[in-house]
Each structure stands twice: as C-alpha cells, then as structure tokens.
Amino acid sequence: EDRMTTGLTLLWRCLVTLVLLYISVLFTFISPVDPPANIRITDPGHLGYLSIEWSRPSSLQNLTDCTVRYQLRFYDTFTGRWKSVRTTGLSYKAQFDLEKPIQVRMLTLVNGACTKHSEVQGEEVEFVHTPEHTGVAGSRIRDFHCVYFKKEYMDCTWQPGSTDPPQSEHSLYYWHREMQETSECPQYIRYPELRRGCRFPREVLLEFSEFNMCVNGSSAAGALEPAFISLEVQNQVKPAAVSELQVLSEDGLLQVQWSPPEGRVPEHCLEYELEGTTESMDGSKWQVLTNTTLCSSTSLIHKPTLNLSPCARIQKLKSASKGILLLLLKQILSPLLLFLIFFTISVGLRYLNLFTLCQHVEQTNTTWLRIQKCTLSSMES
Image 1 (cartoon, rainbow, N blue to C red):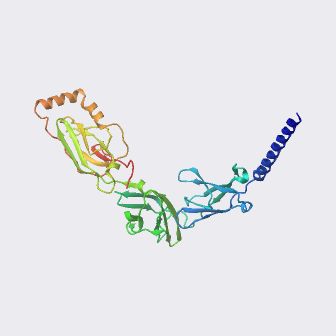
Image 2: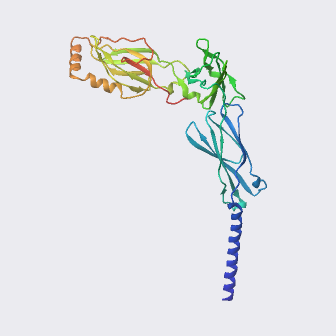
Image 3: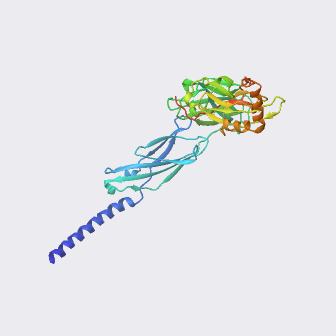
C-alpha cells in the first residue's frame, strides 16, 4: 500500500510539473505577439503593381527555435473582396488601383518548439495608404476602352475630361510583368490632330497578365489629372466578320455557308449566331425573332414560302436565344403557308430561288436574316 501511495505521489508530481511547464510556455506566447514593424508600400513605377514591405518585430529578433510567419490581407478593389496570403518573407507584390485608397492588414504567427508546436497568432494591424495625384480638376480622361482586333493589334481610345484646358496634350504609358520599366505609347491615334488613343502592335502585348496603363498630360493651365487602368489583353479580343457568305436553296431547304473570319483568333474559340426575318413582296415585314448559336460554318433551315424574300448579312453577337430552326418551323407550318408551299410544288417552282444575299456587313439594328459572329468562349494562343 505504501508503494502504491508513493507511486501515485510521483505520478502526481510529474503531472503537476508538466502542467507548470506548459503554462510557462503558454504564458510566454499568450502575451500578445507583436505585429510586423515598419509596414510600408513602395511604388517602383509599374503603374499600380506595388511592393508591400515590412520588418520582423524587435521582440522576435532573437527567436531561434520557432518559425515566424506573417499573414497579409489586402483589399482588391477590382474584385471587391479581401485577398489573403501567408509568407515567411518580408515583402509581397500585388496589383492595386492607384486612384483608390490601398488597405493592408497584417499580423504575426509564431509556431515551433518554443510554443510546443502550437501556433500562436498576434493581433492584426491595419495600414492605409492613399496615393496623391495632382492636376487640373476635372481634366481626367473619360470613356477609356480597348479592343484587341483579330488578336493582331489593340486600340485604346478615350475622350477628354469635363474640363479640357487650352493646349492640352495627353500621354499614355504602359507596363506588364515582362518589362523592366514603363514605356510610352508606340503609336498615338489622333483625332483630328489631338491624341485620342493609342495603338499597340501584337509584339508589345502580354496576355493572361495585368496590362497596366496611365494616361496623363500637360496643358497651359498645368498638369492633367492622371487615369490608371489595368486590364487583361485576352479579354478585349474582337474577331473580324465572317467571310465568303453564301445562301443556297435546295430541296426545300435554305443552306447558309460561310468561312471563319480572318485574323489570329483560333477557329475553335469561335461560335456563330444565325438570326433571321423575311419580307413579303408587297413590302410588309413578317418578323421571325430567332437566334441560334452554331459551332460550325454551315446551317440548314426550312425554305420560306415563295412570296417571302429573305436577306443575309454579318453582325457581332450580343446574346443567344431560341434556335432559328424551331421558330421558322412554327411559322412555316401555319395553314396558310402550307397551302402556299403545296401550290408552289404543284406548279413546278420548288427549285426556284428567290433568295438574295445582302452585301452589308455594318452592325445596325435591322430585321434581315443575319449571320452573326459570337464573342469568344475561351482564348488560346
């Protein structure tokens, strides 16, 4: 019995010792872990691609048996949400909108032998940096947009600000991750003599990466307010119109054929839309509001009645809706049209082709039969 009592006493003492050691370690790091020191934002001149830098807290300078990490959170104004990253480094680079405040939140994390491998997290601190820009009030450019035509060149255009001081001249500078420093626009677009845009040849563009631009300028009244823009080039692609459009009539079917548009856009990245309507000989219009998305360069639709004269042309796709074949069938199978089809066949005019092909390719809101080019569903080099 004495031996049992002695054993229990020793066991109890060991447990108390372990608890005291654990509490000692816990108290060492439950006390607030200091946040990173000297948080600062450095602008290397890359038009929004900034470097966030910091130093190790002085209280952790001599810590050797634990790993010190940092949690960085920053507000992405492009997506409207916070992004988070953990790193053992002392800097991190990210894209920011230089026309809005830059919000950064950081904390320190300690883990290792000194904490019995239990991660201890410090208090989060916030750092806000507001970029300062000068210039004539209201002189910032407006209506900036870019189009990457056929993946061959990109045009970016703009309009002057609400305040356009005398002798104003705009300048555009750009940068992407494969450039050491910013460069000025390679070819300005003038209207008539004033700079109203910039043309980028394909060789200076970089897809699937931030493409940063700044439009600033000077005037007799002083510097113009700068505008900062960041986009991804592949999202601005606009294919050319389809070519070699043909409309053939055979065996009661209207066959529409075309060739893929010219340019560097891969054919498998394209979709097409066929939209149709007809007009009777007396000038009254019989509308068929139809849209159908096609992946090939040919389509078969039922031939309308003989007193209808359809037309075809090209237009950029805006949206896809119901298929043209279904809606045309619903119109064709009406009793009156069935009678006209029967009459046509009976007089031997089944193969008569009264269809004409419009040569227009301009993009206007009309009710003619159209072959339309789709927006890109994906992009590959």
